[in-house]
Length: 218
Image (cartoon, rainbow, N blue to C red; front, side, top):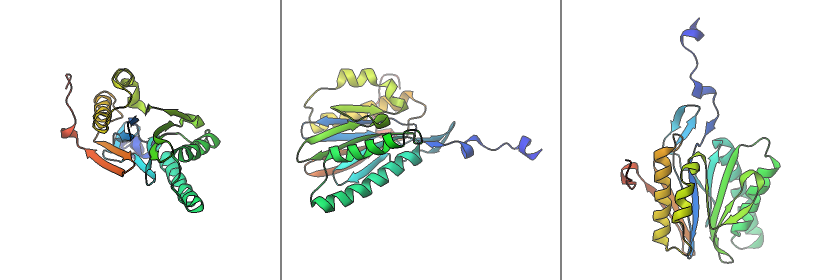
């Protein structure tokens, strides 16, 4: 009787997912990676300000989407493996090495895991790089988008992306893309987290909701 009157909220039994809009873009000298901050379980928003940009090494980050638990677990495993690898080779790991580790885990456990990670970073061999690792497929791209919100901004990023953008242009491009996605996708929202990576290091920024750019439909 009590169960009928007071049914268990759906979010208690639903898997926690990052919902998500994630994006990474190369510019002349580095890379910018960004994400929204909304986390949902079923139809409920369980976290409004989760940072979905996880450091894998000093100048390598990944953006998380899919199951929050799965994505965070992959990131933590790769972070540990890269630390060990950098000690063994006595040098910073390559971005490609980090992306390959993510790809290997994603492919090996593709039946069990529900996660899509975009890996981005800078190294002295290849400069700024972006890798998509969907279902164990590894592709190097000038930019990559992912998550439920990415469907709403495919046209925008195709039309607005240009090669050899400046750092500032790339940062604005990422924030604009995230803002458009958050305005249309019910599973994306909150604030915009943005990390800029180049030879000098990393620069982290959180753009609050009232600081996001305004578009004609808002």
